[in-house]
Length: 219
Image 1 (spheres, rainbow, N blue to C red):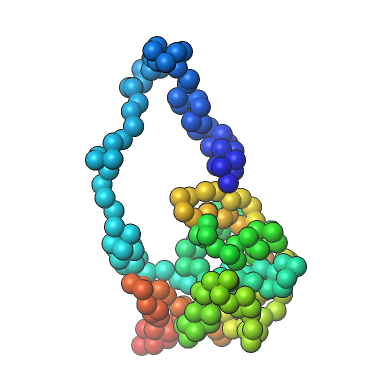
Image 2: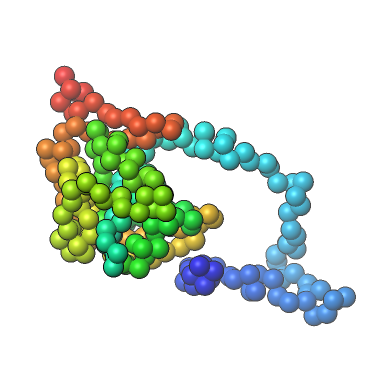
């Protein structure tokens, strides 16, 4: 993963650590800072703002998001995980992105497959989501009793009854702290108008929520 990060930094023109901090000439003769740039120094531990992980989650939980299931098929069969950190990224070329914890046991299987299908969940699919939110190490067969069909291009699982699906190949993977940022190239996509009538499944402040169907909201 470190090599991936270095390649990404070079691709966008950012200097690597070695370029930013040239080696000193000798232990007693440190290299001077580059002309026009201030000398760099490390931030002391007493200068960092303490951040409580629970408070971080509580505050960020006020941002409502949709819920998806990222699914693929490898040599062991279908696999997938629930994901709320999904978004569109680019129209030309068509790209989407999602974030996954680096500790995920499901992601390595999807990475090996090199393809995935994003299943956008609708209202009433909370239990389906919970089934895929369990760690793969605790529930290896998340697809037990879950109907699906192959997506048209990659063959990744397209779950039955979802309002929308996006069939993708893995385009790039970047490091992002304790998560990975996965970029997918969209190969096919579609909707189920009947399933979409119930509205989307949302996640807000640690709970599932849903919007009123469009016809009810407009009445």
